[in-house]
Length: 287
Image 1: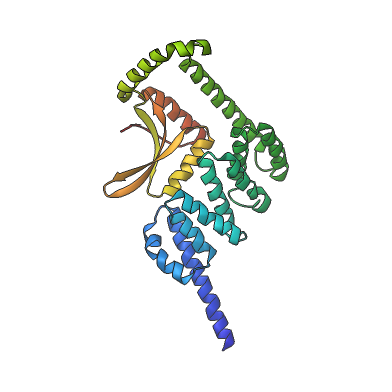
Image 2 (image 1 turned 135 degrees about the horizontal axis):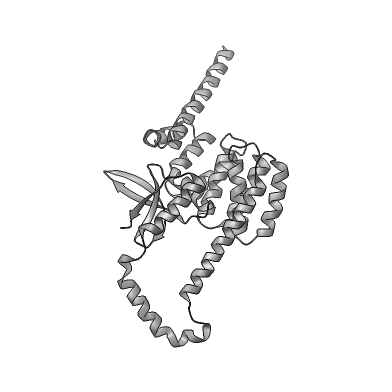
């Protein structure tokens, strides 16, 4: 009789895990409705289940709350099958927020504790890029050598070179923009305040004709999927953002890149996105 109870309990555990895994896969593929409906019941039934924590984090629409849930999952259940996913979610949250030091601290856990994770290549690239953009290029080069030995199948050397090249191009573009915006030196600034103010008024009055277009690379029912694509675009050097839209009683999360003065300017970037990431995009008019 005792054996029967043990088998029944084991069967119950398996079914609960399978049940949660199904909901998790549904959410990851953009279908959130069923999981959202059953979440309160699941929380009562499996309050301490790490897979439930992961599901809850995926369903959470507030970024701060989701980050806290994934942090709790990692801290309490680091060896769970979703431990590496939780680390990546927290790291991506910090990266998207521009908190590159915090992102790097989390990403560094991946090669240490989850070297066999399916996310390892992405984690390595994000980690190196976080170091570069936070001003630690020498440290990034050092770690690239470490990762090259640890992960011989990954083209780490190529990745660091690409990241450094993109960073230098971005820095040069910012410098060029700065020079264009400041055609006079420091000694002339005070005497030209009034002129600047007039230019600003003119710019504001013509705002409707400036930066009228953006690229849209996707519109997702899942914010999680939208944020994931946004991160990939940011890593590749594009200024991506997520915009919440309402269409036919549905909430969508659109991923958009930049602001452009003309469709031709947007098309140039569209070609770059396709070349780098094989992602198609359309030019849209900003509201």
